[in-house]
Length: 339
Image 1 (cartoon, rainbow, N blue to C red):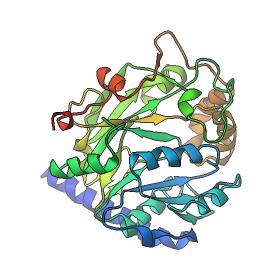
Image 2 (image 1 turned 120 degrees about the vertical axis):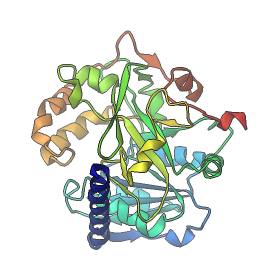
Image 3 (image 1 turned 90 degrees about the vertical axis):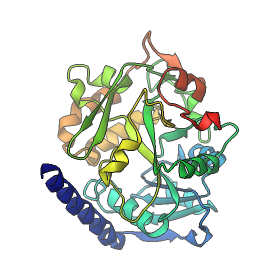
Image 4 (image 1 turned 180 degrees about the vertical axis):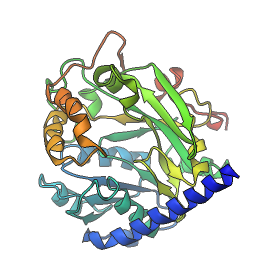
């Protein structure tokens, strides 16, 4: 009976979040709508962003090479040329809003509306501008190949570990130019340790560990960032993300990924947060207070990033490719490599 009652409450929660998304559409202003180009075979990428003109040229080119055919973005009051750049991209549809990112469930109300309207029945990536998807065989196979296999095996979501990348020296000590591969500047990561637990009643996974926890939350590891995500989903109108892309409803979707060590097909999101721009962004976000439910509790974290720390240590490893990540147990080809 308890499980039934929990299921009912989660059903109510999901319906409420869908209602929020439908209501949130009134807060979005169309900048460029090219969604008429979307068809049944399209693979979409959805995101909410602010002041990402530095990262976007490489981000778009990288995911185009993987097989994304159309991008749907919500811009949250950028003033660095992001809107102008995206408006000129032939495969981008763009909306804008000046409303509170935090009050819109950290942008999820806006992106859920776009998924409801445009992504139903299609494979959809939901990414931040500082994330680069890695999946097995990506040099020779595309997202189309990946999603066809997921369809064949009945898998509705594709999980990934968010892997923090960083430079060898201080995070503000290197230069990064527009269009440059971020891995030329932030090539290092922590190969271990990572830990995973599954939580009731949503059955959501909670993976923690890695560089940010080691450097910024060593005194209280439970406050470290959540590193598991479900970035690629065969979208259905009933689906909602709960907390970024870390967890979803219906809760059965959360079982698509078990974290590092999962032997099923899964990937990695290379997290390029710690480019030199991280210092400038942390100064801004500490003032805006839009990125945490209790932003004042993370003042020390922002201050630590603003100081330009060195995340590299003797256990750091330079990124070499997806096969290296698989050998480390951070992702898996599952049965895909046996086809």
